[in-house]
Image (cartoon, rainbow, N blue to C red):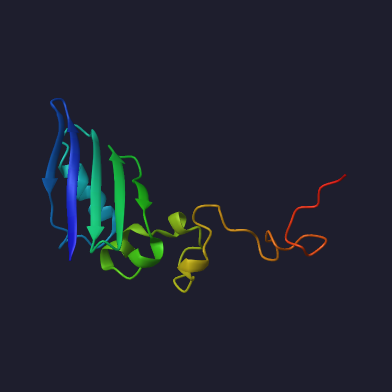
Length: 132
């Protein structure tokens, strides 16, 4: 079960509407659906939420490439709608590398490189060495 809505900026403000994604198979299809909601090529936001597991926000400004935010890539990858949003560029993987483990990707820059951790310091105590 999913929920999808379009928020289109108009000269009168933002207009919200529910939308169906039954005919959407690619990110291009989703972008086209969003562009149809704004005849003036204004900004459109697409909000997708699936079973409280993940949500995505796609911003489309005219003919520019969509900008995408996904709350939980691993959960979204198990959804046909999530797979539409999880582009290779967004995931930082090479095109066609469908076997990449989403849990191991550094999507937010917080993971430490292999071999480095807070516990791996020179004296093995787990504390930073402070000169006296």
